[in-house]
Length: 206
Image: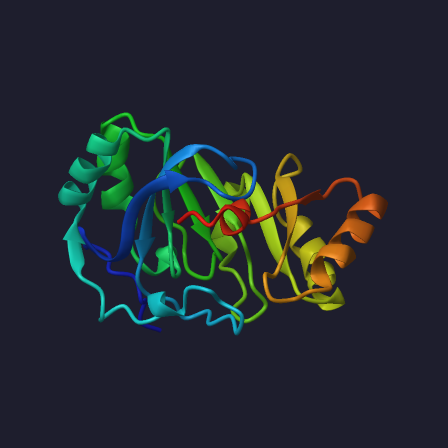
């Protein structure tokens, strides 16, 4: 089967490149520069970034130009997200960022083979397209989006596959009104899990 990854690519389809604050997970509140890459084939029905799905509609940026833009912002962390960033070979981009002494994070569903060098990996697997096995040993933070009881079962299944010291988060799906209550009840019975809240949506920041 032909791989979807652009093995020698040094350009990336960029949906957004912006300086803000990390709004969720362990690094909530941290000064961060976000690189949102175009392209996703996971297609979660409740996705709030559907504009990222097609790769072709987004402008291609050279990794060197992206690094220059980030250096000017001087963030604490650089977050590569999407879309599904592992559709692309992230080795050239992360190598360029690391050469400048930048701390690089990844947010991924893990649906494609792992690439790149990261200081932190947030893994948010989806049942719509199961993860590639290469992701499991790389995970620092496991984040499961919860819409119903079946997602809690998925969370426990994924938790068995990541390293024991991985931080484990359950995050309410924004448009599922009962998910927060369900998560709180679950965490009270399963203290190895934490609650992740999308604070940037409450604060109305990018």
